[in-house]
Image 1 (cartoon, rainbow, N blue to C red):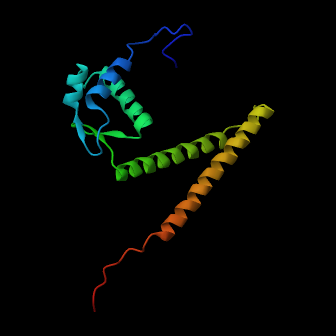
Image 2: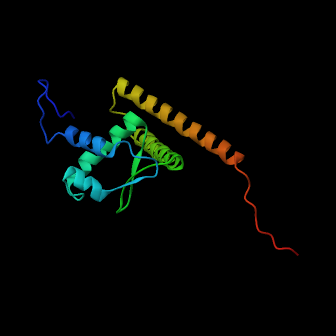
Image 3: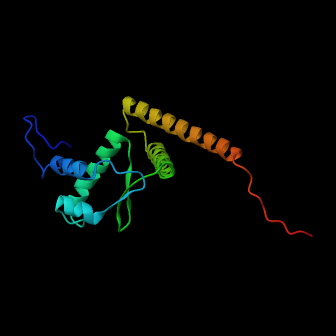
Length: 162
């Protein structure tokens, strides 16, 4: 969905660019671990943190900072925004991988459980392609997961001295 028509006129809401520029000028690029309180952002934007406008602007700002400066800005519940450290970034990436694999499995299940009798030849080819790709990705992820688990040190069990 685009906010501009072919003539470059904006439709569908209030543009966020000026608010994002204001945040960039005032806050800059947040330092890793530094918390930017919601109250500060409310004051800068003159918008309540409970408004949908606040969410719209801050989501776009966070995406822009990530895209332009490779800084991921997360949230601390009830407190504010925080630039994520390396460990947090790995956790985020791991969670996205897990979520993505879940979506891939679901795509395979949907296509595999669909009745193909009323599909065209092209649609059947697409279904085969989706099944092949999703199966390959899930299989590869399963193999890598087994390799990773094999490399982890065995847990030390507490043994009673007899």
